[in-house]
Amino acid sequence: MRRGRSAARPHGDHANVYHAARLLGTVASKRAALVTGAGRGIGKATAELFAADDDYDVVACLDVDDVAHEVADDIEGGVGYQVDVSDHDAVREVVEDVEADADLVAVVNNAGITEYYWIEDLEPESWDRLLDVNLKGYYNVARWATPKMYRRGEGYVVNVSSGAGTKGSISGGVHYSASKAGIVGLTYGLAKQLSPHVNVNCVVPGAVKTTIGQRDGQEGLFTEEGAEKARRMTPLQRAGEPAELGSVIHFLCTPGASYVTGSLVDVDGGSHLGATQEYLMPEKSLKPDVDEA
Image 1 (tube, rainbow, N blue to C red):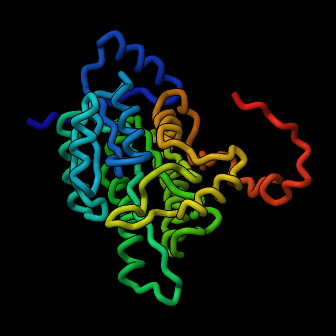
Image 2: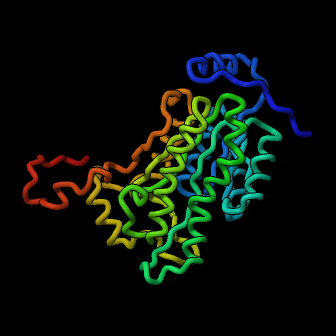
Image 3: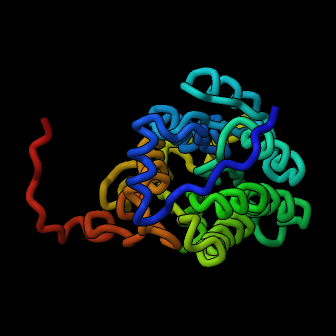
């Protein structure tokens, strides 16, 4: 049986009061997080962090592959949904199913695909398919989930973009860059429209150890040589781990981030700063050597 709408929860300055009441057991309704692209990489790591958070009872794991069910089975409170986020009605059904058991409090839009085409070879079908997943998919989730959050007076949305959306892509086609830039604009628009009750932010990853682009025998975003160059250009001199992205995403869905909305958060090892001196002019570096244990 589906539950009726729960009472509005305190937000902002009163958030700590609500969470204290929850710890005392005086708040009965369950709280849910929904993560798209949860079958691997950043999405999976994020789902695992929500599952470990006592403030969330249900973690809806969405993925286009049936691996969503495997991830959900392995975490506390996990519920798997094999769904294509570009399917508007299917996303609505998922949100309704989650809301039948719990109040949706946090949404992480992470699902995405990539491919490279020279602009002359980029057919409208390829453009439409990638934008349908990478941008329309985010809209689909936001359309069905965020009004419920707004009316209850509490909610968090984190959209995962890419450096391709702020600087252009070196490994994906122009349609990939366009989709990721669109996510930034969607974030800004939602942050204004859903204020003051729903916090909406955007995480911008750099080079991360994920499997995006590796389905169907594809190599992924980078060759080994390309990955090494990317590492050397990054100030922290390495690729990020999915869990490092997940921890920031999860934080943005907690009371600790209650005064953060409409922000772009670079989680890229400093690559947004551009190439390091060691990469461009290694002979000019004045840094001392560091002994490695």
